[in-house]
Each structure stands twice: as structure tokens, then as C-alpha cells.
Image 1 (spheres, rainbow, N blue to C red):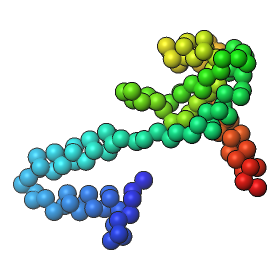
Image 2: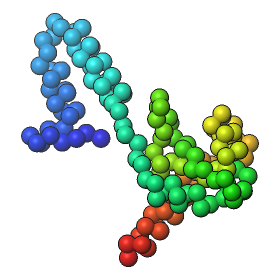
Image 3: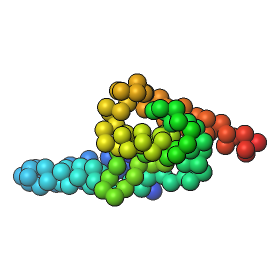
Image 4: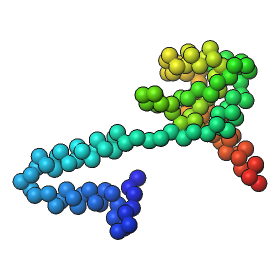
Length: 137
């Protein structure tokens, strides 16, 4: 999504106008400028959302892998960076045994246990949103 600048231009509009201002003879400069912009967007750090209340909420449910109700951990399912966890809103309740198994190979774990990870995350997020709405009312 393009952000709008105070002048009313979007980032994309500004980028296109900068590219058009480069002299035609400097084709290599245009290419390097495009690559620089793409690299900036690709490697831009995104801080994952942290919410201890949501993690506590998820821990109340049984393990989605085996159904155990003890030793439940909120397992982060999203993409992980170096020394970084995914957003807390991408957690599923897993017992410690299933959590270790999930961390070794998430796709295989989902296939073996016949889980729709995205659907489960959406379901838990919906339940949490309903709970928060009721608390606010």
C-alpha cells in the first residue's frame, strides 16, 4: 500500500517522477536506483505484534495436535526471523511435545494431524476479538 506524503503524492508517484528525472543516457543508474528501492522494501524490518493477554487466551485451549489439556504453550506459526518470533496473533495452542514436533517441520505436522493452520489462527483471532468486544461493552 502506498503512503501519502504531505504534498498529496504517494511513494510510488514520487519514485516514478524521480526515475523520469534521470537522464536517458544513464540507464544503468535507473536500474541501480530501482534495485535499491526494491531492496529497501524487501529488507525493511517489521516488528511483530506482542500481546501477552492473547498468549494467555490461547493457552486456555487444548492442544490442537493431540488434545492434551496440560503443558500448553502458545506456538508461533508465522515466519521467523533470526532470533525473532512471529506475531503473537499467529499462535496456536500446542502441548510441549507437539510444539517440539511442530518446530521441527510445521508442514509435516499439519499434514499428519490434518490441520488447517490458517483456518485455526483465524478462528482463534475471531474468538479473541469477540471476547474483547464483550469486555469493552
